[in-house]
Length: 312
Ligand SMILES: NC(=[NH2+])NCCC[C@H](N)C(=O)O
Image (cartoon, rainbow, N blue to C red; front, side, top):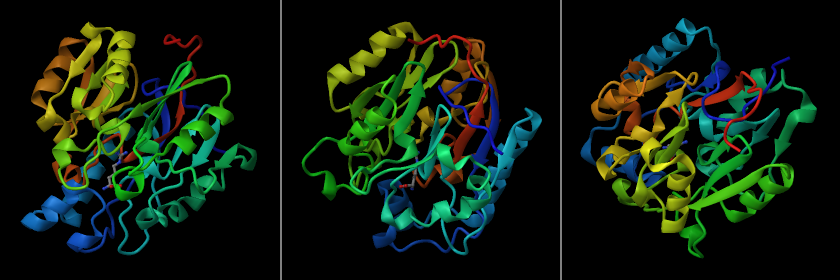
């Protein structure tokens, strides 16, 4: 049996699913892209090739191994993108929630049967069809669950809007003892610098009470301000549009102290080290071309339980 426990983004990680770039398929046609950054790279002829992405993901697997983390990989579906495990399912407390993901990505979950079959069926939850949700938008944080959403009436026009308010409400009903706090995110189907594809593309809590945040990713000033007040201004590392484009908020914590980050994130990595974090640098530039990074390609299954959750 696989044990589940996730109540925040940074407690000591014990087990994780890491996506795979194997048999990722040929470069998609422009009309097949479902995020603007991939579309731009398809247009420019710079879409990442499989071999380069496999090397990058193996570097992450090696860091997990070094830190004693059990790693599960998806079975390979031929010519299918399986890099971003984060979105297809997610763990909150001891529940494994199967996400209601974009139709283009609906087969990814089939590659996890060897993981799902080891989970107590009572702990597996499926969302109703009208509740769209992807794991990149969901962040348990102690007494809270932070959720990225898009509340506009034009939600159906945005292929970049992945979590709706039905899902936010459903999550609240599943976890009545938690405060589900939703954030209205800026979406663009065409300009990646203006698109917070998921909450983890513009925000992420890390250890020591700190977070990484991009102000313009939030449509409501008050919701952005709520986070700044909650963490404290001095604990927020603000990233600009370009840094969001490169996905600086999408690093991944192995513990309160150890963070996996991209090797080109010089300003962020320097700040993290100055704050006492240990930064494990990996090359992830090719993966980043598909508008996802380290958080997106990982799905934590078990983090060490926190005796008393600090952020209440
Ligand atoms: N959790 C995330 N931010 N995932 C990023 C997924 C990127 C992928 N190209 C998509 O559009 O679905």
